[in-house]
Every structure is written in structure tokens, then in C-alpha cells.
Image (tube, rainbow, N blue to C red; front, side, top):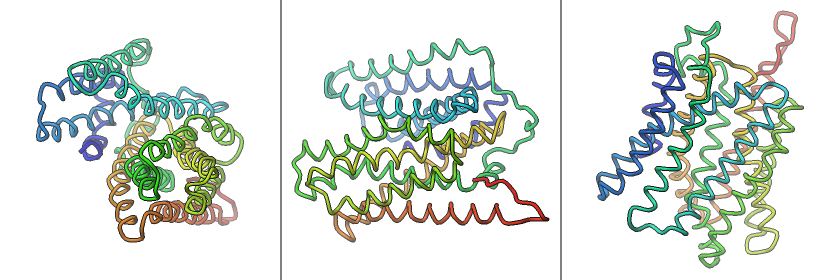
Length: 342
């Protein structure tokens, strides 16, 4: 339900940001999210939670779209990749901290809901320090939204789509993969932790590369490394080599999103930047819906190793797309060579 909420609401964010200001919209979304977290305890039924998850997808997508647009805009060109990598590391660490907090405070009573609500509200305070009410529209104020944006950066959106498939499939199925390969519950949970560690501690080197080399080449390098690690994984599962393979796969697989955000900030500004962030959110929603379903299908059809092979195939197709896009935009045209764009 949460990805559906993201899909439904993300196309509206550029319009609402232009009409009401992105600062005001982000603060409102944070407050709504905080109340929604408390509502899970108030309306303690499965049917109500379906609806609450839908609304939470809408509010969370607003926070992601606007915060990422701010980050890529204010990061500056010289250090944009490294700053976005730091953002990605913090995001991954917070995803890991959430389940750890649940293990500490439990799932009963009001405590987990109140703490979750407070965490969101604390995040509102820095928003009041922003001097600008919205990202200026620049000379692109007539942008039509994410559908107008999509033809301008199709491979960036393809990268987000592939990343979302990997993200959703691994978060929901990697522990299952471990269990089906004979691991106990604790070790199977650590398999996902190893992937997240790679995403947390190794994003900065990827951001450094994105600041110094063409983004298309860094994306292709991350995708190729991910493919190799996923192909190797079935051969090393249950051995000590499984852990570094998972860490590298997590770093490069999730690094696709870091470099995509960096490329977005280097190419677009103003309203188009918000359009691009909203388009990223839509593609993440589509990929997340497909990722868990396709990952589960691959495991039920081809056995547990169908999961890494399926994800390797997704990233291999992405590599082909990056190569073809690079060839297409760099062909001689009217006696001149165009700059490679994603």
C-alpha cells in the first residue's frame, strides 16, 4: 500500500510545491506523517492499516522528493557526489536503526508509536531554518511535471527502477533466501545486515568517483560489479566469502541511486529538479511493487538461487541500456559530437 501511495501522490508534488512552497509542504507532510504513526495505535485493525499505509506513502513521498531536491541543489557541483553519498549512508543507517529500536522498545503499548512520531517531528525543526520558501523555478517555470521530465533523462529513471527492484526484493526476501539455504534465523537476518552495511559504509567512495568521472561510467561500473557479486553469491553461500560478497553487492547495488541523484543535481535545477525527484519517487514505487513479486516468482520457479540470478539479470539489462544510451547520444550529429547524457 505504501508504494501505491507514492505512485498516486508523487505526480502532484511539483504542482503543490509550486503553489504552496516546498518548505511549507514538507513541514505539513512531516506533521501528517507523525499523526499517521500515532493513528496505527488508535485504529488497531488490519483493514484500517491498509488505508493508513496508503496515506503514509503519500506523506513520505513528499518528504523524500523535497528533501532530495534540496540536497542535490545545495550540495554544489564540486562535492555533490560525496554529499549525496553521505546522505545515502545516513539513510541506510536509519533504516537499520529502526528495527533495532523496535527490538529495544518492543511492539506493545504506545511507546513505539510515540517514539516514532517524535522522531519525525524532530526532523521538522531544521526545515524552519531554511531561508527560501521554495526552490526557485528559474527559467523552467513552465515545466509540465514528471511526464514532461521523463524523456529528458530516461536512463536515470531506469537506474532508479532497477535499484528499487533490488531494494524491495532484498529487503523482503534476502532473509528467506538465507533460510532456504540452511541458515538459522539469526544468520539469515545478518545476511540482510551485511548488505545494508555495504550501503552504509561504502557510499562515500562511490560519491567520490561520481565527482571525478562521467556519471554513466560510474553507474555502469556499479551495475557490473553488482552483477558479478550476485552471480558469485550462490557459489559462496554458507562460506566466509559470502560476507564480503554481500557487502560489495550492497555498496554497488545501492550506489546506483547515489550516482543517479548526483547526476540529477548536475543536470537540472528549479522546478525541473523537483519534477526529477518526483519522477524518481514514481519509478521507485513501480520498482518496489515489481521487485518483491518478481523476486518471489524467481525463487518459487528456479529455487532459492533464482533471487540473485534474477537481480543480476535486472542489472545486466541496465548495463546494456547504459551502453546503448551512451552510443546513441555520442554519435556524430550535424558534424559535432553531443555530450553524453543519461
